[in-house]
Amino acid sequence: MAKHSFEFKKKVVSEYLNGCGGTLYLSKKYNLGSTTQLRKWIKAYETLGDEGLLRSRQQTKYTFEYKLHVVELYLSSEVSYQELAFQEGINNPALIVRWVNDFRIAGPDALRPKKKGRKKTVDSKNKAKTVVQSTEVIQVDTSVEHVKQLEDELLKLRIENAYLKELRRLRLEEETLLKKLRGSSTASEENSN
Image: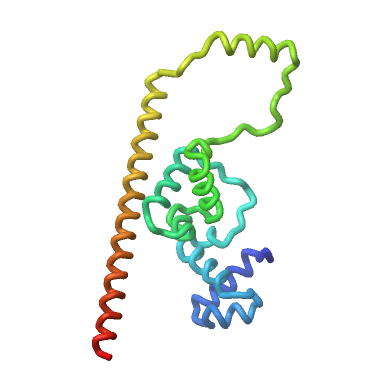
């Protein structure tokens, strides 16, 4: 995949916005392959301005809460990754795709920041001590914050579950209605013959 400079993207988008040609014409003129890339640039420029066309060289750090918020927005609405990225000001829709997939596979904990680097090695003497200590005392975190966090997570999961059940019910209802319509149309065709 070719990387295009900001100036090149701005030039092509400006030509489109000034009416110098449509997406198909400009895509062929500048050898972009397809109109999809140009349409993305145009949409990014219209929603984010010049920043939408810039390739960010630095990694933006997003908080756990923000990631969870974006994933919930995607799951609860019927917008595309691209539209949600523009709505939230994220320049890379693939980032949202990864967050949603991680969330579906491993739950909300997959969105938490991970420790970087190599794990510390433990020599065998300390390892034996930690095993003995861990079997003796097992504590359960019953702090108010932890309980509140679990209650919040439970509520979110219940809401998501109810939403998905309702969506499934509506789709089944729609399929049943379509089957009835198909059945009545074939019956009317047979009667007319």
